Length: 548
Image 1 (cartoon, rainbow, N blue to C red):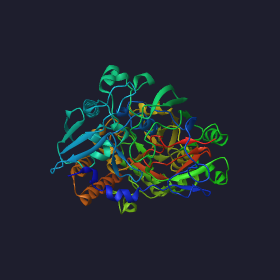
Image 2: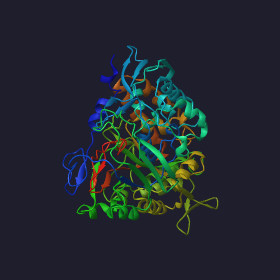
Image 3: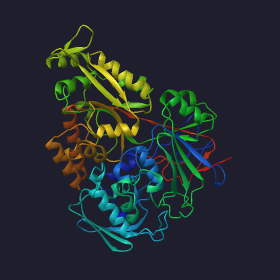
Image 4: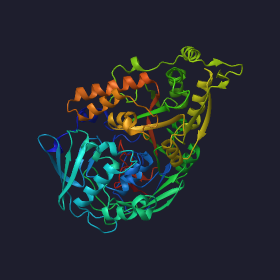
């Protein structure tokens, strides 16, 4: 079977659901694929210049196998290459693997590698590097993404440019997961040399990507410079390399007002994080074009189920029903979101058809009743008490879009039912580290995904503890359903298993899906050749160029 024509189970439906939607707020561009200037690319691309991207948070690590942070993925897509890529409609296409075959029993994948690909160090990329990358990823202790290739039994380098991957059982998501940034190909010798320090600073990275890392000042900026030797860009981009721009500076600007000021004054040319409060004002701006695009995402609150009082399901259910999601949509996201009723967003295979039936509805009276039943009685100061102790919980979060409005709103909603919420904000890398250590009670975060497995197995399988299952959630029936979905080649059976998982997760009440965001990016008139990728926004940056 030729896998270049084969889609992972349920991917055909995904292509329609996740087809890129790019539209300008305020008139341009009309193409639906490009943005920049007054309506897409103008004239012929020119080489040179520095592109500055304003972002909310810093990269966590440059080791692609040790992180699932979107802020890291954005960099890794430009620094590394993968065997397979997802096109702008999310279909699977070749990259460092020119072609592949799948055996009739769907357990053996044979990849034929592109020749002439080199790491920045000058070393040729060969099958031994692909073998090492997959084996390291599979066995790397603490990797939050190794579950994506868990069904792999063995990897063989048949010759310098042929890699054979054998599975323990059929696994239709393999190619999709090999297209993720976590599957970035590594230089085997270089990575072994730096061991645990790999990816901690620029000199400990050696990629095959179109940009090299030359500077990284934590929580300030990260600089990428063009790799002039790069000529093997994937078929989904027009420019196969080298890139047009000399440099891309990723500048960390957590504050929304400051980030937009940098864009409006021309100090930055792009941000993927336009605060919702600024969208209406910027629709008529001449200095910034707003561009919308679609992806699958969920903003949520997670609860640590092994910590009192969150180990009491009635307390968790009360918190669920104290959250007014529509108020968050309207007042926190200024309408640029939809109310979330399940972990998986509508339109993706596995999203529940009856999500409204299993989700908790806003009902503060019911929340109060549940807290009364759990023994938490309202105190004179408006905070509930039990055995002389106040019902006080700590909500952890990091900087993010609309965070300054949303977090106090959630705090106020919970106070109305007698729950005191203390807030703790941490810098992004420190936040992730603290969550892994399990020091939190409540956490606020968002996740982007391209398959239901990418959020459900990721967060809810007990084998994902302590991270990214940061909730200490253990449910054998959920584990069995998730394992069943991964092994299934029947789209309907797979989707049904995912739906059943979500019904149980909602019943157990430890995970609150709040909203699905609508994405709005800000683009300077000088940035040309922009085509937003639904999984990775700027993707490899090969087609980007700056006009005068």
